[in-house]
Image (cartoon, rainbow, N blue to C red; front, side, top):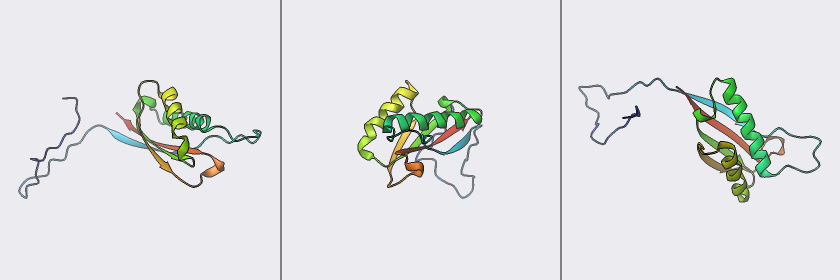
Length: 127
């Protein structure tokens, strides 16, 4: 067994015994949402893919400051104002994470700070 906690339907609570909670030496780390750095000199708004890459770079920097690396990121939530461009978000994820991509949830929103098209928050694990 690889150390994961697994519960089965037969693990019923008994009034005479503890529920069987297990402690693991893992700590979840939650990172604030990161949006792409605005470029006041740009005439046009950057593409969704480049904004996603920029936000992922900022996520990586936050992860690094906490003493973790991208392999420790378990999941991300992507907020986007343009759900029709999900393929661009996934393309950026594929390029950024190579073969080990964290779980990703995408949420459509009407507006983000700094007129960004994407904002990404992450959850990691400290082992």
